[in-house]
Image (cartoon, rainbow, N blue to C red; front, side, top):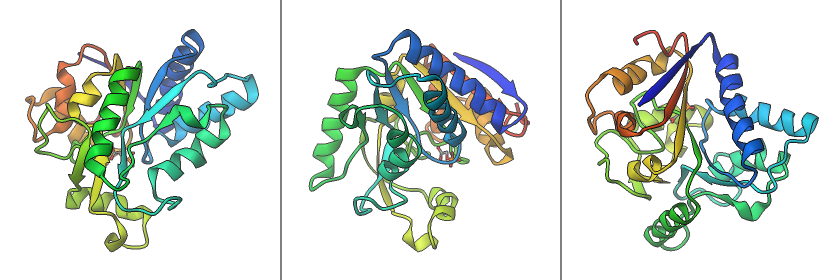
Length: 240
Ligand code: PGA
């Protein structure tokens, strides 16, 4: 079930998402937040940090689990998602480091993925923040992913590597693999908020909401979830 909230632009999308986060963090101080990386949630994270600094909203009891991480980037690499989360969120709020989880490749990535799935089951995500790829992916679950999928190592689509090459010196530097929560892992969250801004997301949003449920559009799996809020700006909503 989708509740669709159409807003004017990126800033309004971030404001609405922030209201949801603030509500859950204040009413359930030990909540588990599922977090995403990429350009889309940056405005939301900025608002969380400002609110923490100005109003003292605390994340001391909060636990976070991230959707995904590249395989093979050295620790501290500026494009790793751990680095992104540290820079944009974790180092700027009062969340204890041990409460922040991201998938890690380590020596045996498959074993790490199984461990991550166990952590997800143990914690239980209250609110999962999602972006959407222009190809309809959620997390790094690329088109063709089974809806039963759990946390695992995946090959990245060329379209995703192209989209993300804007953060690297060249496309050759974009990792070819990632660790990602699966679609079944994401669907276990009690509530999901999916954010989309910009015309390059319009086709994916329309296919997610109005198209058939198909692995060709991984986000269409969300049609089966009972509690999904979609916050879209005018450009991303133009094909709805
Ligand atoms: P973006 O990525 O926020 O950088 O557009 C979204 C995604 O690929 O899920």
